[in-house]
Image (cartoon, rainbow over all chains, first blue to last red; front, side, top):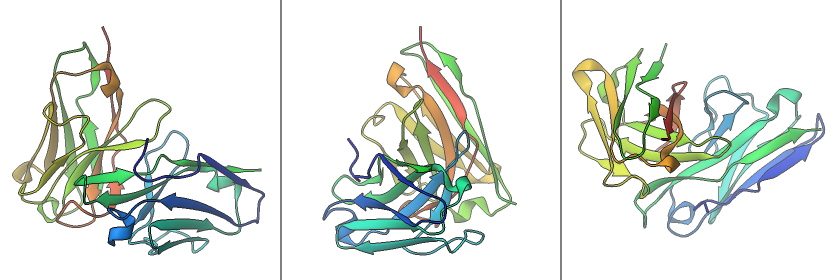
Length: 111
Length: 121
């Protein structure tokens, strides 16, 4: 059971917008620690998608956006494309556990 | 170009030891924290351990505390993970990842391709 909770799966048609939630608590996201998002395409290593809640590394399309509010964060993907089909993970830090924590991951299916 | 290349994985019996290495290049190694993250077959990501730029701050997941030891050699641009008393549940692909800053709280901005550790008799 992960400290950060994500839905196991989401889906959407090409061109649509989907969001993936990441719910934490007062000792991680709610304590002000940043949330980061990773994309893992099938058979590949994870790739940093969003850092510091809402910042995109160079090369990441602006179709990907992140936000944070209270004890939760969200990743939004607009203009869905077939190549967005992947697993997505949120990550933060938990001060009560003194650990880096990941969400359980969300599998995005493009219909 | 930032490169992280893991090595040292393999098949090992329960209770035995293994040492993973990560060779870094393309950046100033001692400016950054480094981490090990693992992924069991068909499962999600699990942070294993992290070490700050000067080894002054080190952290471990509860699942490996007391059995695994992370270290780094800044002169050799290398990160290590000494894994003792291995268990079947340690079977996973182990990734080396660069922290975004010198301390180990932050994002992981570059990842290696991973080295597979299989614990089985």
